[in-house]
Image (cartoon, rainbow, N blue to C red; front, side):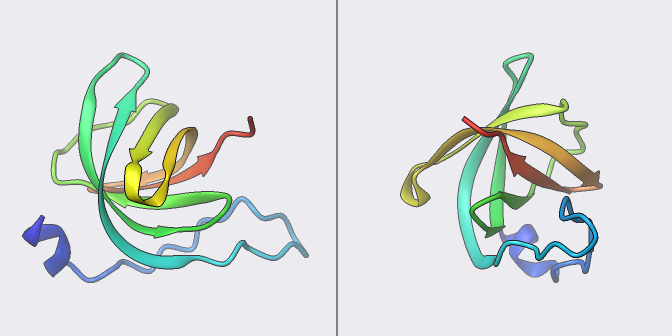
Length: 99
């Protein structure tokens, strides 16, 4: 966790908003959470920002997430399926699936 906190947030500008559409407002946070892959593997992550449409998560393990994951963080009341929109080494952008 300290390693993740010590790394400055990388400026990644991936977006699912189309031309002329506005991105959802993001709220900075630092919450421990769990991502569960389709294969059932659980990965401890930190939610670095969150919006109504998705979240940015960071993790220490070098892992390739599946295309769809379950994100769980109880204090933010998040337990939802999400699509992995982008992934770099140690971070990923998740778009919450419509329910």
